[in-house]
Image (cartoon, rainbow, N blue to C red; front, side):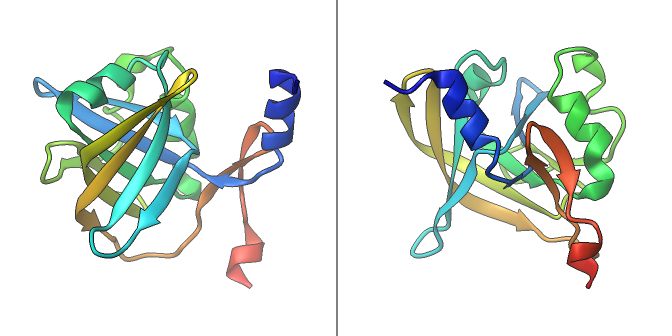
Length: 165
């Protein structure tokens, strides 16, 4: 049997893009940082999946609201990523940047590399997590350079000059 800690150490070697997943319940925005976001299909219906630990406070809100927004973070969003990955100062998460509600009401980060507004279509329980599948109903693609924030080796990082060459 594989030790879960050993497995996590191995998975930390897989660099991943950093996203803030948001949703809204009764006019109150909620969100958390995720690296487990994947494109499932582009045709006939653009679909994304997000894996969410059931212990995350936003888990049940996504399930109840039936929607979520995937906001792909850029290098300048490092402090925002830290704020959304910590329970400390949770009430300040949406106060430091510009957010705009999309079709579902889920907040989209104005400075995100891209924001995908999704309607929840399916859910699958796998051990400690739920895989939420969402049909994309709106996409915001702001102009600007492509400098994604990544997570690797257990920490946030950037591609820096490698993307600029």
